[in-house]
Image (cartoon, rainbow, N blue to C red; front, side, top):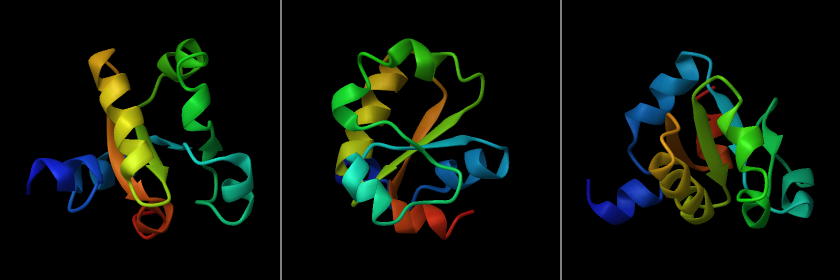
Length: 101
């Protein structure tokens, strides 16, 4: 799989493995998008808030799977938090993640 596929969370068995092991799902879409449908139990932290809520996310104490509408925004969140040392993966679109749980 290429870099673009990785950033968009396509074909990633790593996200499925983290979910199987009890990872927390963070949906980085806007609250309005989240209200329109989301993975049951997912936490909504919009992408524009992740830096100011960094401590909250880093202190979850479990691996994290990020999702959004298509995998682009969740890819940005994943890259950011991987650079901070968080055990996380990009699950891609929320419907894709929904199919993994």
